[in-house]
Image (tube, rainbow, N blue to C red; front, top):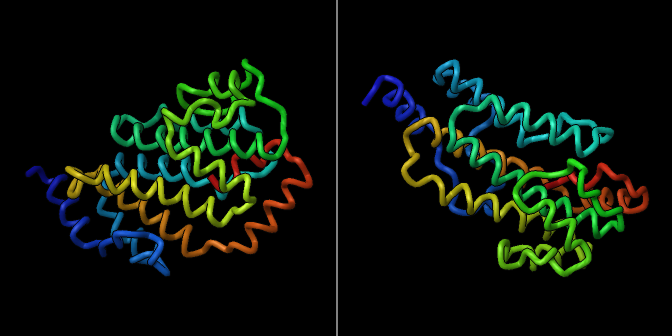
Length: 229
């Protein structure tokens, strides 16, 4: 075991385990302050990569005034900095999921179909989504079986169930990928990503989400499609 591998094994052992299901968690298993202290064990390059990952996937710092093209452009600038292919694949999967949710929200709000030359999302299906904009599930239910249930939550105007369902998909994906990555940098990244899921769920306010959803519907803001995904 190399020095770096040994250090990361020690880091992972020092972190309290996540629950099997994030829904039962009232708080993350460790505070962000203590987590940051443990993460000081990371190599400088790995710490920088982790910072980039968090800045891409957790957008609390973004203004509502930013448009889709700017979101995509800024994200790609950061993605291209990441050298680790596994970590990059985690990010692209999450952004592809976010794209589908954003498309469903955009259609539910009655906003215009993205133009075929418009830069608005991630993944290989953006043009297909535009082509089949008015078809149920964008004709993607064979690719994304979960889109059927997700669409139903939109039809029910139920942001709480939508949030829970999206986070469940994310949690399950991260949990499946933890195999063979318990004691390396990739394992650390997966730990942090699951930490964020628990943190987000523990702070989720269903009443506030419903109020915000209704506000966005009334305003018809183009840039609201990337919220809460």
